[in-house]
Picture (tube, rainbow, N blue to C red):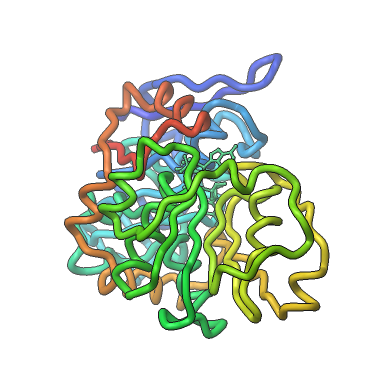
Length: 326
Ligand code: NDP
């Protein structure tokens, strides 16, 4: 028996509870993992609070990522005792996820723990941090280099944003952090942001084209914020877009794309091919300072996960939340 967050269907939606479940209830899969750490990502918070239809079958254990130790495996790639990490693949949405003492998954979904990270550090990064790295790699793929000028990171005090600021700053980019929380100025400066700007600058509808400012951008917000980011990109700049914390819509025009050659690079971590995942984890080991990572990580016990999910959806959580499970 082990502890698990369980999301159950109710007449008017869904309800999350902390429950004790037996191993016999785990879904089919070829590798059983004793979960050591899981995390709270935006998507987990949406699933737990029921604020968006993330969960595709009930009952569901949320947790789109976990780090742990293999207990049993019929996949020749893994043996008992191996340390592994999982991000995405619909885990925590359609397949029981990481916010439970054990998980059973397909071996193909796992990656070996990237040295020198500990299981705890790997989840300090989690899906948010791994996605931030995919965004940085997207900027690089489109030729954005530190000498070209300022890089904007939106939703900067959140999970994806914090890791993006830290990695870009370490790589020598001039990072400007956009936040709705001016009280996090000290935190964002410590991560490496050169300037902090108020989210309110970009939340209202803007012009199709604005003064050219950003050589690159990482956007987790969507909506008017992303539209205004696109409008203010420098000629041939690139925006890596991965999130919808401010909305699903994109009320923009073609002007930035056809007149300034701006690239809107979509980033998805869930189904991202394995070679790119492995590359992102290698790059995190090289380009994210472990002391900085510790500074953006907060531990929340299993018993406090449900209220923490409410705070996360309300935009009140700073950096990354990790959950000691095992
Ligand atoms: P967090 O909640 O940790 O961070 C989101 C941040 O966005 C908040 O901290 C806040 O930053 C800002 N924000 C929140 N609400 C609003 C709003 N209404 N308008 C404008 N800004 C807002 O979430 P994560 O970092 O875990 O995830 C960020 C986004 O990225 C989510 O939409 C998530 O679904 C998405 N995502 C996508 C992935 C993919 O594969 N494409 C993978 C991982 C995440 P501040 O207070 O600094 O303004």
